[in-house]
Length: 88
Image (cartoon, rainbow, N blue to C red; front, side, top):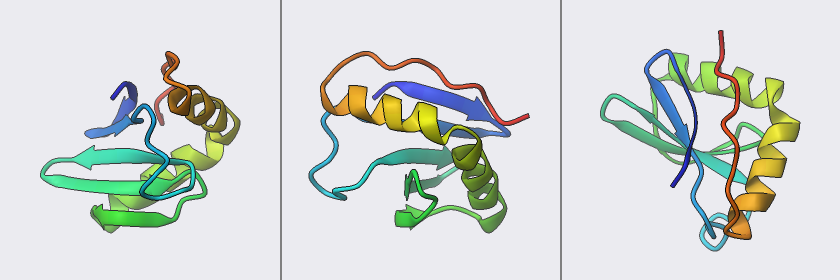
């Protein structure tokens, strides 16, 4: 599960071959003891994360949407993914 980015205490990861459970492009976000699965479109799919951090993640998703879809395509084909610039 490669780490895509890290900002403001949030770690964003993407799993290889991870398209069976949610059936839509998504990332996994970790903040403190919280874990959430979030669609690249910003929809909270599973888990929980504080609202402030969810809004930061959603802003990051908007800024890097194209890169995220490329990373998703590579990850479901079990190919290496590149890191994505953190939110500043």
